[in-house]
Length: 303
Image (cartoon, rainbow, N blue to C red; front, side):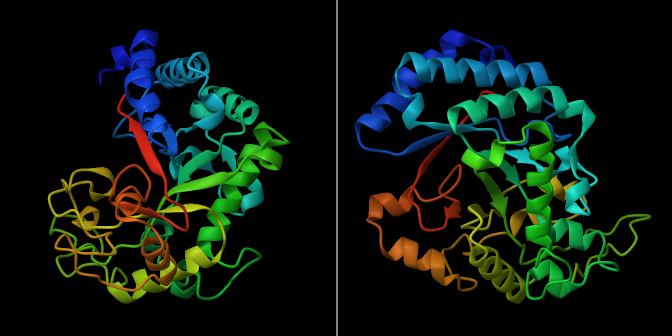
C-alpha cells in the first residue's frame, strides 16, 4: 500500500476487521510487523510515517479488542545501531532516535518484542581481516559474548536499555532475520577490491550449516532467513546492491525443495506439526522458519 494508506486509520481498521479478525477466529496465532527495515536506505521511511502507521494499527487492534492477543513489532535493520563494539557502547543512531524511543515505549506498555535483523555474515565479510571465521560462525568465543551473533544481540540490548532501563524485564529482543548464505559471487566491476567473479569463499553450505545450528543453540529467539532460495530475487535488493548474487542463496532448501544442509531443531519442529501448520511456520512468509513455534506471521504492506 502507499504511504498515504499507511497513515489512514480507516485503512488499518478495515485490515484488522477483514483480515486479522477472521484469521484469529479460525484459530491462527497472528503477529503483525509494521514495515520491514523501514530506516534502511532502500526504504528510507520517515519516522513520522512509521509512527503513524504503528499507532493506527495499534488503535485498530485495541478497538477490535484484539491487542492483548496480537503482538506488534517493527523489524529494524542492524544499521540503526552505532558503536556496536564493544556492545556496552552501543546506541541508537541519532537520526532514528525520536521515532524508536516512542516505539519502544509503546512496545514496553504492550509487552511486545523489539525486533531487529542481525546478519553477522556481512559484518564478517566486510571485516574478514579482523574477525576470525570461527567467531563469526559461533564455533569459538573471542570475547565475553561467545560469538559475533551474541555480541551483536547484546549491542541491541545495551542500546535499548539506554532508552528504557526496564525494557528487557518484560520484553523480548527478537531477531527477525538471521542466516548465512551458501553463495556470494561478486560480479566483475571496477575498483571493487576483493570482489570478483569467483565469489567470497566463506559463503558456502558447510559454514551455513555450522552458523545456523550454533545460532539456534544460543536460545535467543530468532526467525531463520530463510527456508528456500530465491533465484528470481533482484540482485539490486538489500545487500545485493548490484555487485553480488548473495540475495539469492540464503535457503536451507533450494527452490526445487532439495535440502542443502541439516538443521535438526527446525526439522523436528516441522515433523511435529500438521501440514497446515507447517505451511505457516516462519517469519513474514513461508520462506522463513522460527524454531519450535508455529506462527502465522502477517506483515502489513503499509510501508
